[in-house]
Image 1: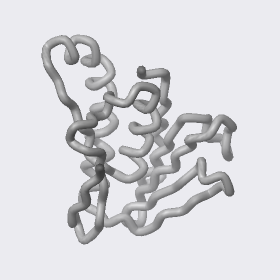
Image 2 (image 1 turned 90 degrees about the vertical axis):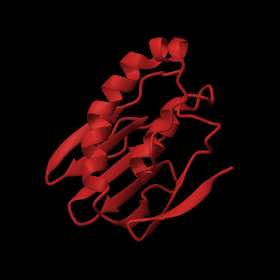
Image 3 (image 1 turned 120 degrees about the horizontal axis):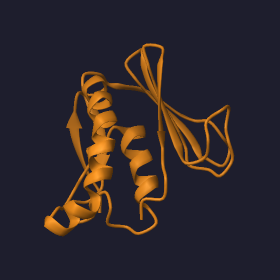
Image 4 (image 1 turned 60 degrees about the vertical axis):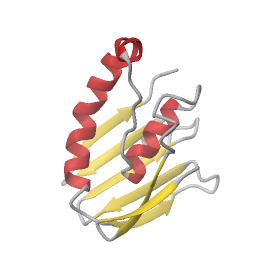
Length: 134
């Protein structure tokens, strides 16, 4: 189940509160790419054991996520594009100088490796590579 809300004059979606960012085995990497692509909030259910297991990944990802969201939070999503006919490469644009291109496929697309997102902000590129997280 998904819910929607009005946010910066845009409609956004996130995963259901019962399904945190790690819950669906085999889907964690894809979910992370979507979190960047759509600027949807990260969602964690943590207890001591889960924190111990996921701490390194959460802390590492937060370094990039925090910078990205601080920029994206202040802007509307101004464009969405499906770049390949199989729909596995997609791009969102926030404002005029921030974009995310996500490659969900198994083939490199214009220099973007499979299972990777590229954030382009004011000419600076940040690469989000998804390693096996599950």
